Length: 393
Ligand SMILES: [Zn+2]
Image (cartoon, rainbow, N blue to C red; front, side, top):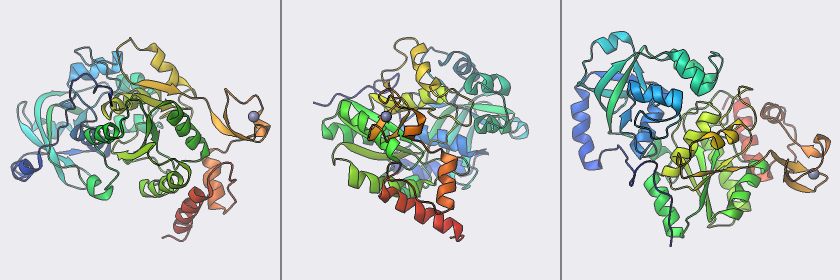
């Protein structure tokens, strides 16, 4: 019988999305309230709370939780939580809102009312303190730091009620699975040990190799795609979904994997973000998370294996989910197959490694992509995407 890991810090999932029958009335009430705009990152965190992925959070964090998260990776009450989940607004807007007011939360990009917040506290933060702890840098060129620095001056804390999940459920039908849904899928398959494979890339052979190592040692695999905002130059979600569909149809055994997407916006916080990724995968019902090279990193802010090492520094019982730490993967011509730095004794001259930047250049120039690097079915999808971009389509 299937026995999945428990949600984080709670016996049951705690989605904040109102039942469908209550949403129309809630929306009508919210339309009359003061509107607080949410940035794309804040909206993505809101959606994670709505679907239950951030169980057991009940809303945006208070000052004490924020500070404790930054400094000690726990909520003020002691529960493990590696990254602050906060909502900010301008000083003028904050002045017009009183503690105990209920405000409407509006997605800045779509203008849609997403839910409401019962304001329990208004507070200012030391942004450099947050960035130093969470990102290990205060460099404004770091995309996650830049977003914190651009936040409003006042944070609003309190309980959230979600009225809408925006365009996601419609746009990604069959892929937008909430934690209770992935858990039901795993249980139906009789899985207990489930590995999550996080991806914000189309899957090339190195990713396929990582995914298949996980399938070898667990009951099944969750291929979990980031559907939220990425940085410039990344492949859009719909193209990635097509590429991964082609790959799995042809090269994966049916019944060994589940595909899903979720709405987080990457912070690129490297090790700290790897911990958050593990935490909410536990809520999705996963017992393991694949952590490869430079998980959730950007540029050269983090060492290639910092995101693996940080798991070893946590107090026991921080998380039930465990990292599956895997070394750099590549095709080795001398080994004659896929390998990792742990299993291949050969040098760089025998290994096929192509950087993301070089790969984009190869696609843009119409160069051939070696079949040892990426499956032809995946390459075909990506070529079509790059050709469309070149023609302005
Ligand atoms: Zn080798």
